[in-house]
Amino acid sequence: MANVAYYVVAAAAEIAGTFAFWAWLRLDRSIFWVAPGTVALVIFAFALTRVDVEQAGRAFAAFGGVYIAGSLLWLWLVEGARPDRWDTLGGAICLVGAAIILYGPRQSGA
Image (cartoon, rainbow, N blue to C red):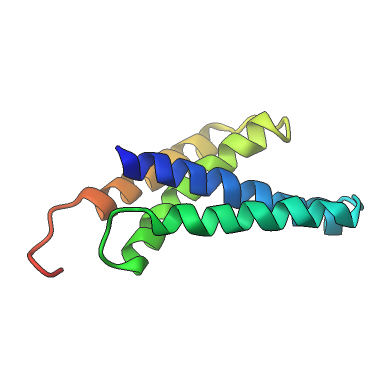
């Protein structure tokens, strides 16, 4: 269960951090958006290292599904654009894929 919490924190921090840069560079917001964005990206990196898996690549791969679902929530809750059924289906498939990567049975040493 701790893995899920770390992934949620990592996704929220990465999305918020990259959105801060998006706001500065694409929405003509102040450069002062970059400082909290950078802090959020550091939190993202820290949270992702706390996931309980042996290989970084596996942690990163599973995170991809969580990131996609989190981005769709951001789209809806922050940007006010409700995901359509295809967004929702795609996000659900990605979460299933992330769960398979993270919790699938492994041979010893795999």
